[in-house]
Structures are given as C-alpha cells and as structure tokens.
Length: 280
Image 1 (cartoon, rainbow, N blue to C red):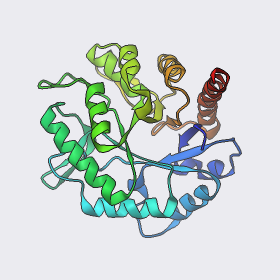
Image 2 (cartoon, helix red, strand yellow):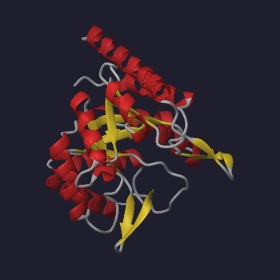
Image 3 (cartoon, rainbow, N blue to C red):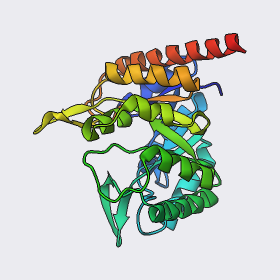
Image 4 (tube, one colour):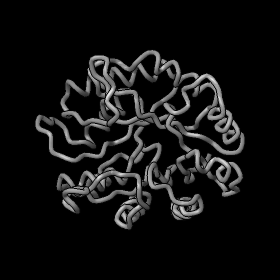
C-alpha cells in the first residue's frame, strides 16, 4: 500500500472507526490486548480488518532484557499475525521482564556492544518465530545513563543491519529525549538512514507534574505538538513518505479530533509523494 496515515484503534471508537471512509486510513493496536481465545474484542478487530489495514505494535517482548523473548508470548503473537495479516509488526527497544517478573513499563539500558549482541539475538529469535520482519522503535528517555558505547542512531542502525529488522521512528520520542537529555533532535533525525525507516509515530507529550517544563513526559495524552509537526515535516522532506501513525492512549478526545490530526499527517504524506513523482 502507499504510505498513508493511521490511528491507534481504541474500544471507545470502534463504531466510528469501522464506518470511517477516509482514504488510506489504517489502524494500529497493541497485540497484547487481543491475545485471547475469542469474545467481542476479537470480533471487533476482525470487522475493522475487513475494512482497513492493520498494524500490530507490541509492548511486551522485552527485547533488551536478559532473557530471550517469551515463547508463549511469541506463539500468541504469531497467531494474531496469521489471522489478521498486519502490514507492519513492531516492538519497542526496551526491557520490561526480568527473573520471571513483568514490569509494566518500557525501561532503558546502556547501549553497549554486549547489549547489542544480546538484542540482535532476541530480534533474530522473534523474527524466526513470527515469520515477519520487525520494526523496532526508538525509546523516550528521561535521564542520562552511564556506560553507553554507541549513540542511539548508531545502535539502531547496527541492529537493523545485523538482523534485517527495520526502524519505527517515533518523532515525539526524539523530541522528548532531546529536550530531557540536551541533544539536537534535528541532528538525530538527519542521521537516521532513510532506507531503514518502515513507519513513523507522532504523539503528544506533557510537562512532568513535579518538574514542569524541565522534564517532558511521553504521555500520549495530548495532541501532537507544533514542535513535533515541524520535525516530522523536515523528516519526510528528506526521507519521503512513510506510513505514519497518530498515537493517542489517554485523555481520548472525540474520534473526529484524532481524525483531523491524522488528516494533517496524510496531507503531508500526499504532498511528499507528489514531490517525489515530480522529481522522478
């Protein structure tokens, strides 16, 4: 399919999502919410899939953890992939599981060569079981860790080269991390190899309740900021049109508000495709 813009699918919006005629519209879900044997949740997802393409965006694989991806988790994810045939399957560059305990967060790690080897092994194992190429998302960061041996773009590019995975480039995560850690988001985005980007995420952030503007939180509970829109426009001017998701997980507005943000991204993608045709 042509690179178009999509929305995260939420139960509150199932009926409106199913009926929406917007051209090129697709929806993304967290597969962990659909790893069940039956019931209305899977029925709704099947109905949406008949009308719109789907992507699966995982949050529980713990690719940077000490343990390999959980076999039961991968089997359930493979079943969803086989049933719904998503055009993209993605996961986070983080860890969330250790010594049998699951932590409901996406936790950071030092970007060492030893950790790169481990994560490559985990991505290879996951892709073998899933029968699909994964896209790996750059994280949101809130504090500086010690022990890094590679910068983030270098680490992501090395991971992609060694495993054949692609990158899910979250522009809001870059904006948040750059603000919190004090680096240049433009330089970061300009350094990402265009050919590795399989999808882009756009989301909202918010000042920390205690620290205010000194610390931005990747809240997914607000509209996409104008700073992020500007970074996104610069990115697609360089790399061309890429499938783009408007990500909203909390403080959900009416569906038409989200659709308006989606339409803004869709318009930018359409203009990028037109420019590429003219240049060819």
